[in-house]
Amino acid sequence: MPGILKSFTKITSRWIIFFLEQMLAFSAFLSSLLIISSVTHRDITDMRSFFLLLAINVVPTTTGMMIFQTHAGIIRYSEMKDIYTVLKFAFIQLGVWLLLYPFTSNLFANIQAPLMTLMINFALVSLFLIAFRLLVKEVYARGLKGWSQKERVLIYGAGNIGIATKNAVELDSRSGKKLFAFIDDDPTKIGKSLCGTPIVSGNLVNIANYIKKHAIKEVIIATNLPLEKKAGLTPLCAELNIKLSSVPPLHQWTNGGFSVKQLKEVTIESLLERDVIQVLNEKSVKEFEDAVILVTGAAGSIGSEICRQLCKYDLKRLILLGQSETGLHDIMHELHDKYDSVDFCMELANIRDEQRISNIMQYYKPQYVFHAAAYKHVPILEYFPTEVVLTNVKGTRNLADAALAAHEFW
Image (cartoon, rainbow, N blue to C red):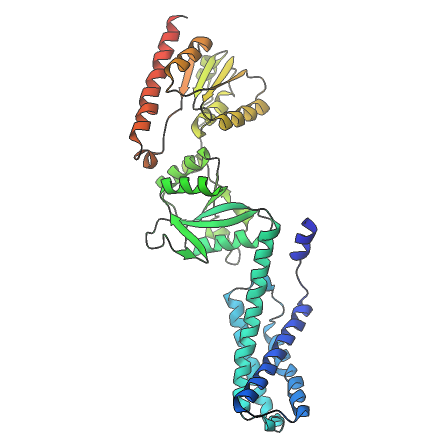
């Protein structure tokens, strides 16, 4: 399969394209002669003149192709400017034919409307060459989709930068990405489509549901998104284990575009717009030395980062508590690989469970508890206030009561 894909993506020689375009131009001129013959109900009887006209057509065709180099471009990457080039080529071809007409008028003697024939040829050669480019581009795009397994991505921003990002993603066969939908906050765009791709709402609840429903793997920010929106989107993607990246600044683009390799991952730190504060200090080193520390919500974006920071200290034991089985598994493996000197323990539990939390506290008796198990996405949680109270309020009280009770037995 890689061999097929490599052959499929290989750039075709310009001379093969030259030959194919000559054949298309020949077909267009032949069709125009036959159309005029059919419309005027006048059969072509002088076959010698007929074939001479077809042969002479090579001159204006080659002249136009050499002036505008229509065969030199990579057809699969054709854009609107390539269509303009084809139209200019057709004008030149028509102009050369008009210059040749005084010398070839005797060959057109068997044609009822020679000038109309040239005009029809102009329209057909434009149509054939443009259709050829669109067909190659479509076959190439569909071929790549069929031969490669690609991850679905969302592009945040249904504007010019979003379209440029779409082109960068789809034209890079090695990116392993496939655009599934655009995201936008403009209500006039939501529900419509852009370049055949649907546009969905930028509401965080909708984004979360869309990611889960369609197995999205990455969100690419391709618009000037407000900081508060980024601040809500970043932890959401982290919680769903989705990569969040953004396009490079415009001054880093080359020839109006950019490479997929230039996409930059968005992190919590990148939202601060300042240097990250280093929390490792002398006081903390002394306090946490040989300490037993419990982190709740250890599988989440905030809790997992707290665990990474605590591993830099000389701890006696670090207990990771969370209700996400996969998240705990991932963070445990990550920390084990990087910090083999720390004694890690994992507890799969929900802070709403008062008895379970009490048992964990009694068993480990941690000196410090970092509490990160809480719902944080306010726009989503406004729809589920009961769940917020049960976790953020009752769960926090369970944790505090269990810590106090365990402390009494030290």
